Image 1 (cartoon, one colour):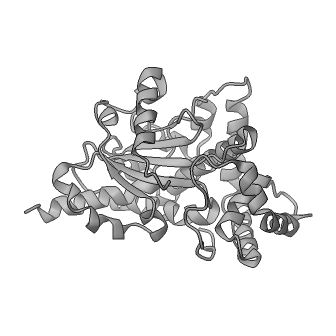
Image 2 (tube, rainbow, N blue to C red):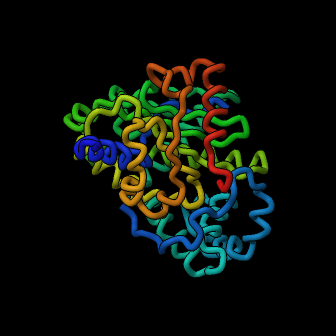
Image 3 (tube, rainbow, N blue to C red):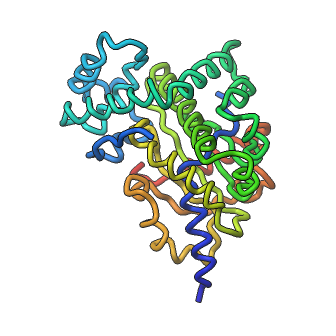
Length: 319
């Protein structure tokens, strides 16, 4: 019989997974909005134009609702993501958008502005320079020493979707939380999501293919439950994800769970928010497991290609 402590530790590690923080960029409290009527608003790889046509009525209503508003920078793709979660209810879609805008103009204003400026600097020469993005993260002087590309990294599939990878065992969360507050770490996480949102929406518009963020959470090396303060920051960040960035997240993959615990997957799922449960995937990922840390995913093209192909192969057929 599996030790209950082991199950608790594994579950605690999984709880942290959906709200991982920002590491390396891709090479290539707000009021909760009403619950989405469609948690999987589109299949991975769907054409942006087709989605825009199917949701045009709601998108137009959203555009009208922000017409004339100062300091509101929302592209058609931004509006489309809100429209897709409430395709039959313009009122709910407008309410969700207005709640997100309120956060972007108040509590999250510094996050939104920092992320926008950092991405512009990172792409100024036509490529990607990750230093401006890492350095502009909120409280980076406190947090970057603990959350590095060895533990957290963002890369891209060959089709252009973002893959956000975290190996929690390589974050000294206790020492991190001894030096940073829950609010500071939560801001850091929200900044990562904003950067992803900017990149995903830009790609969706430029390539004509709706870009998704895939979450790959590597459980290799996890031996204990996360620091309670770290979990609180993760939970706070995760709670806001669906409201602020609807239709952005794809499947959440829990990778390399110890074999002895895989039989207990049914116990872990209810610990996640419902919106995450329906996108959970529990799989083995040998390429990822073979890495001593995650940094080769940003520096070794061959390893990166092997990994993203592995990830794509693990996606459910319904994704």
